[in-house]
Length: 168
Image: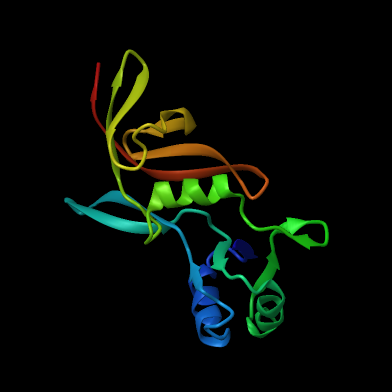
């Protein structure tokens, strides 16, 4: 089962490292942070950077929730495990499938490329291909797209890299 921990934004990597070192391998199958690629023009050169896809969240994979919960007490900076009321709820199969389809096993959402035709976005390569319906806003200058996706029981607004190569 995949669970989501809420942490202070900016401390995601530190929490992931703590989880991997403090929690026994038999309890924690995997701990990861989904990232996305972004291109920036810095001093005349294009640089590809990786940014956190869901700022303030770290994902854990385990079948032993009770033992995980006990082990998380040693992690400094953890806010809470996401759930409803007192119950800790795993990600739905739909959310898990979306994350795997979007970021792959390594959870890295690569840059997508597309065109704008008659005010409609058509993505022809990258993870956004076929997911144009999630796009709410595009900034062609910054090469970014803002998406709205149903995650953690609510609507999340995330940004990903999208290069628009032509507009007609």
